[in-house]
Image 1 (cartoon, rainbow, N blue to C red):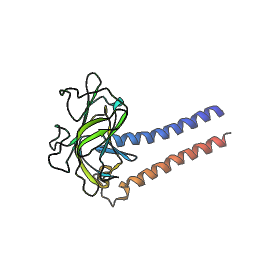
Image 2: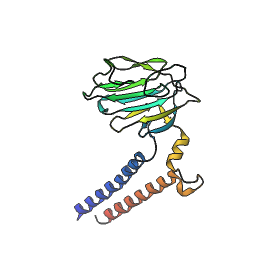
Image 3: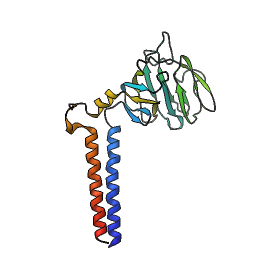
Image 4: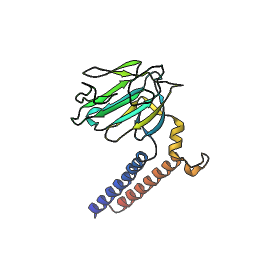
Length: 223
């Protein structure tokens, strides 16, 4: 009798945990253009995006090259006239990465230019500076770069091309608070308690732990 009860208990716990994982999937499948991941912002869908930089002077893009198998482009306005980093943005300023048929990687421009692609390395970060940026790592590569226009620590971006085959993040940044509110409850008034995400999450957690408590009590009673 004990073994079936033990199995039932663990199956119930796994089901409750699975419901929490599903809620995270729902967030990723929302209409948001980006999601917060700790101190980084992961760009997931095309559209405008405003982020607050932890260091107002540094816009840093991160990409794990060995996991990049597609094209990505995000554009922004440069802080200086005649700035240039990529021809794919109307502003001439942005971050571009792509992979060719040989699984080699390229940044900021297309594959038609000679010696523009190279073999992949590990995860890398690029700080967008004035005129040039240096890719950190075992091999140091120099690329054209734009110093971004930053106002009150906020930089405005436009995600043009994005795919789950090449995940690009903004390091040391957070999504502008107004955008988080807009994506969490776009059609609900702010003074409606039932639309409060934190209240809903709290209720769900309490409900989950209530079921766990009932299961534990039932299991102890039948020992």
